[in-house]
Image (cartoon, rainbow, N blue to C red; front, side, top):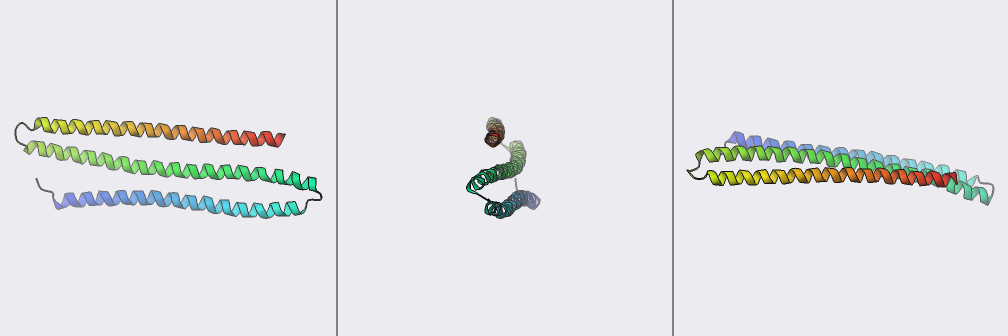
Amino acid sequence: MYVTPEQIQAANKANVESLLAVANAQFSAFEKLANISAGAVKGAFEDSIANARALMGAKDVQEFVSLQSTLAQPAIEKAIAYSKSVYEVATEANGELSKVAERRVAEWNENFVSLLDKVSKNAPAGSDVAVAAVKSMLAAGNAAYDNFTKVTKQATEIAEANVAAATETVKGLAKAKKAA
């Protein structure tokens, strides 16, 4: 059995498309992170100028101390929002890269099974056992990959829930501190 130029071209095209999908996902994530970081830096700079002006306008030490604690709260909330945004971008990028990997694995499996079927048709008598063993190993590998993917998704969901719970806890503590 020979590999035809069309098969090589199709394989190369699939590889290039996968590479471009990965590059697009990474560039999109980088662009989002750059925008988030630029916004955070700009906001922090503007807040620091406004805070410095407010602190300079304090009439006595008690007002100065009160202003400091009041001005710290929005900074904490913005830091939490920044961290959450970065986490969301990372999770989204991971999801996109996982989809690309899953597509490539599915294509590889399909191509391998097709090749195996072609080889088995031209194989000598008695090789059915070997072909069946290879197919069985492939099925076991696919099952293991599927289980790994499911466990990874569950771990990601648990991590997202923990991040959301931690964010709400910090916000609750900040509100309680503010009320006190």
